[in-house]
Length: 283
Length: 249
Image (cartoon, rainbow over all chains, first blue to last red; front, side, top):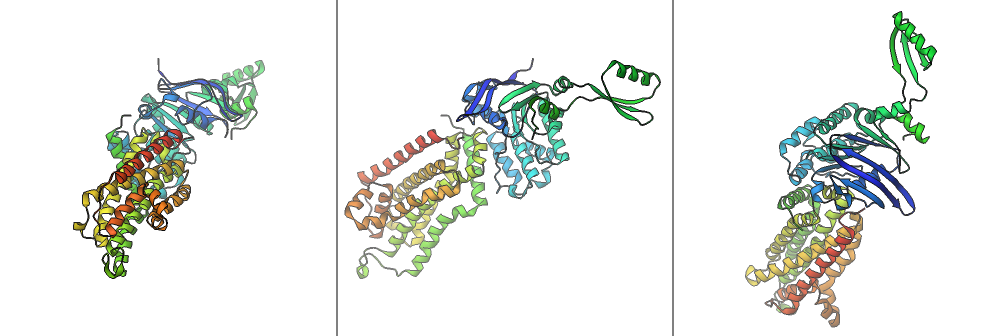
């Protein structure tokens, strides 16, 4: 049984009279990627700030690595990595020096820096000043810094936003590798393909409330309300059939006569699930 | 609070790299030395009492350079980096990378203090005062303690400020008062007496005795004022830090 590395119980946060989080509950286990999905202002960043000890909750409890978030101290920070939109870089230092500073702080061997730079495609730019990097390169550097010490828990707020597909793919591979090594990854993203591909579980957040929580597959199956099949026949005819006795008989007939080339179930993607549950677009 | 030497060293090295990448932070101490050298070459060399002069040129230049370096450089070199780190969101990254406030402050303080001490010593030959005329250990102890007070004041300003612009704004009146201490003391005897109980006043006392070619005498008042200023600024610093944190939400 994998250990629970993040546990959130009845967590609420109010800013003056406005509720940013309303009684949310979830847990993230060792070696799990947990996606926190919601539109801007739904409470994703607030949750990360509470879980990383940067903001106090109004009520409820949250634990990271078994410690209450109110008691997060340096020993916990040594075991977690954080990437948020407010993660700054030392712009006047080179890519390499930005990482060496944190390698020294976190007692990481310098060889790890070269490995990471290679993995995120920044090896050729290691002597460039951070201020001269593109937005995507800066994001890759911030990610490398958060992964430097192979944290037990990694908090990522929109980590691949603005990155090209090749780099995104490389980052995904790194995250998968961290997951294989037992890191629990708490990920917020707008990218539904990313969530579907990477996440073991997702929570859909709307106005500070978790409205759905399950694996991406289970959610898409749950909201596959009008079961449909996309059919491609040998005569290049494409058609959509709604689930019915007649449709099953028709498919059976095509199969017997070897007329069926492809058949796919048309379950909704996470974006459509979110729209179905909340009536809102995930933007 | 247990501090890690490795982390203090890491912060120190980071701070040195940042200083080397932005030499403008060294402008004030370099300016203090440069100004003293330039003014020394422009001003006529007079000794105390010579042609009715109340002070020697070299002594005056040293006192000017000293107050400029300790007050202006000390406060700006410690307040500005904290404010910049807050503005660029790097301070929070450090804090969430297991650096304790104490480790950050000590690591950041060491290079600043070393630069201030070195400048204070270099000001002696720059001003033309012979080393033999300076009570060197006393000079170093007093200027170092005063530099420490300035650094702590800078930290308080840095903790309070959200960005560099605010840090400059808050620093200005403090710097104005500190640098005018020697002049203000000449205006009014009562004011002079009050100013004697500030660390700027002690520095002015030391500078004044050097200006008049007098031997500086350690006294209970100056010692108490210096140590008092150090403890008070340390107390305010700890209070402000505990209340606001380094970079709190």
